Figure (spheres, rainbow over the protein chains, first blue to last red):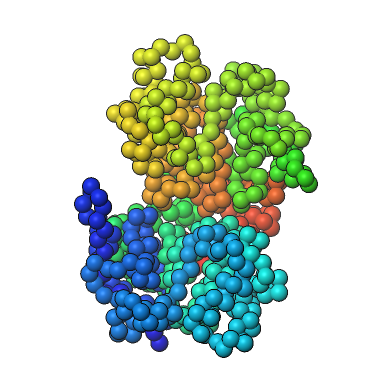
Length: 269
Length: 274
């Protein structure tokens, strides 16, 4: 059981000419292995700042992040070990893979850097990981990113994230760049992996419907503050905070639309 | 039964490359006056090509390889869009059919005020208007879309994305067209801003009575705002029906696939299975 505590984190950016900008304001949550937390909010609400701080690409202005009770080291081997435990899947699979390198290269690099398996087993492990994300190793391993579809690329990114055998995964809008009919496939894959490997997943999205579907708990972020949190169904079906209610009312919901106004069409309400 | 505004008959577009790509194949469609028609499909299905093709906005290597488009003007005249000469076509566009483009928020000229860009429309299409009349018309448009006349001297970068999109809608509305084609008009916007813009489109439609072809991959959104929805795949319309029928009784397998791509926001947890 791995537990990550994000404890009272505040992040202030200094903007030239505009003074201070509080991107995160006293944000706290706990992510445990075996659990998916959905982090929802509009652009500019601080979602990605949380991802950057979790991966230590940014340091908090105040507050602390602890992995199993130990504060995250700021540098050196300790930081590398932490990053081996927590991996990231980025939004844009067209930008997050290097066009020069084969799929093999992308997946074996973390294996070699973190000495996950003995050298002679690297090839087998790459194939196992590709298989794990439901890609056919024989047909993709020697290809380059541009030869794959967006969905296949995102699967490669997931295989790469899993290579170092992390306990926690941060997925920042992992399907928003993909065609709608393949989004569920990628999200279902993440959900299966989460269950089978007991991963803790932080699913960052602006889409309330998928957040509800794939999360155990949901945190709603507005202007750097957590305005509401709870089980997915409580937050989406019975929102208490006015901002959450507003978000929910603005999200497309054909279910309620046709239930409340049978036969009515036209006119956004 | 409302009367017809636009008849698209056996319309095909081919990208004349080697080998040729059929982007739109034999599409026939009847658009009614005042209706919102949703056009749903994934990237590459031909929905944007169809929308451009109807207004003959396609560039080589795209070629209209078959079919006709007839616009039934409010005056009673039937206009065969494919037979219009260059000058007639120039006058037809924006006057009868206007468009809100994909990523329209970034379509404004960054070094001209929004007022002057709106005035351009009148300068080109209504040469008889004098400067004062143009200014009044621009101010009126900005009030209609709730940006406010006071912003007419603002530059695009001084406005938020949602405001810029409203300016684009004002521009599309300028000549009181009978049809507005909107290509993913809210995709880049936040859900709250998106809802505001959708409300506004709906209000304007009631007020001015134009028809809308609304193109997006976001089927749940279309289900809420459209009268009818056409589902497009690989250049073909595989199903067209009222929004309610698409939701409750989709006929085509691909429509069901699209529906099942969206988890339910409310109701039972899971995706929509039909």
